[in-house]
Length: 423
Length: 150
Image 1 (cartoon, rainbow over the protein chains, first blue to last red):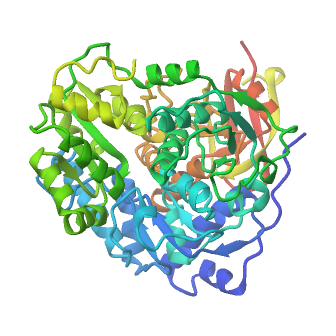
Image 2 (spheres, rainbow over the protein chains, first blue to last red):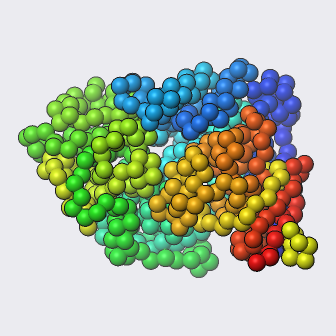
Image 3 (tube, helix red, strand yellow):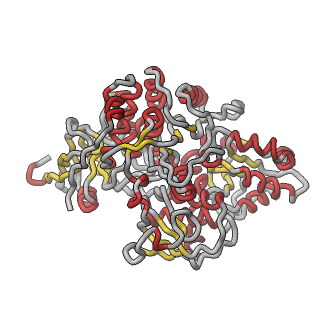
């Protein structure tokens, strides 16, 4: 086997005109990026996308501002419906501190510039919770790893694993490379994961499974068989979000659950791909790896809603809090989308009141692990999110206890030691 | 590099540029949340935790994890703290998006090339790597110079 050049990329007249600057320098710049990625992927043509989710609005340095600033200065506007991922700043609650005053200013400027492009300013990592989500088979260009894996796996929409910059360029040109997970053959399973011996004794099992699956398959496409539970959408997205950070999973199948996999043979010839059997021991190992805090470490805060909590999850937090007739001893933070926070307040005032009574801090537009100044006094954080547990230590320097949602609320009420979460 | 210890390995250009550096072979990493703003591996779960990528000939199958990796890599490129070159075995759009964006705003071009899985392992065991593909279009072939001296 040796490397071969990629096949030629054929552009339509319209796409060629975009590339050559007939629609102005902003469209030409965006098209250069789309064409570059198309050639990386060996695509022979571009496809129109129905929608885009932009991740590049999260501040990582001046280069991000310079890139979108160049597009805005050249008059760029998005051509297809486009949503925005979390930013570095909670625009609705500016009193919440960003990492540094500079990031506060720069993060706000970056979000403002993306707003100039004519996007829908959703500022959420869970665009699939919005009313207009892509249908089965729809081609979209989504960035943000948890949104990508959800769109492909749970909705049956089609997006490749796009990085920042390609997202906004797809929005400005309205097209993306016809490659990767846009193609039928790339959506076939590469690994068979047998979870028959795993008992689903709580919702925390799903993120742990996802963490393990990502470790096994890396950037491959897993198909799970033998899943005993009946996962909700929230369970599936917890699984996907974890698999996307421990590996690079952008699509998973579950036999009899996800829309492209009525049965195993729909997505693979099981005799041709490797099979891995996951056991209860693997789950225990996953719990241990995600818990970096020492046993019995005192928990300083509870962080929920990574990715952004759904309405059902917010209501469940309210339900668990109502079991206790007093307020938590440890602060509870929940990230969610603006629209979800609004829906809770308007449609479920009793649940909203329960969160308010308990002093739950609701963060919109961003994520607690992007606001490290919150954590100056937090040495140990308990979370029900494998993604928070995975990125928290590097992002904010906190030690983590991974636990179920129920254990998180119980620990918040009890105060003090977290008892090592699920250990 | 000395001639008799230098091999040339065929590679596909994923982003044009020129560079050379000491070989550093690592497991897949997420640039966002996994690599600091100064180019150090920050992922506590990663075997190369604490090592610097700056100026190295980075050899890895692919990046992983967050889409924001492109932004982190673009910032490393523009601030001069990126690897000197990147060799992958998968056509990694997250890495190349960062390179394309950095080139658009700064003109700095980080070379990224793709080799076969077998060559990736072999290149990972070399002392230093060189690529010179500044004029080669994406998707076309070039050669990686591999210094195998001890």
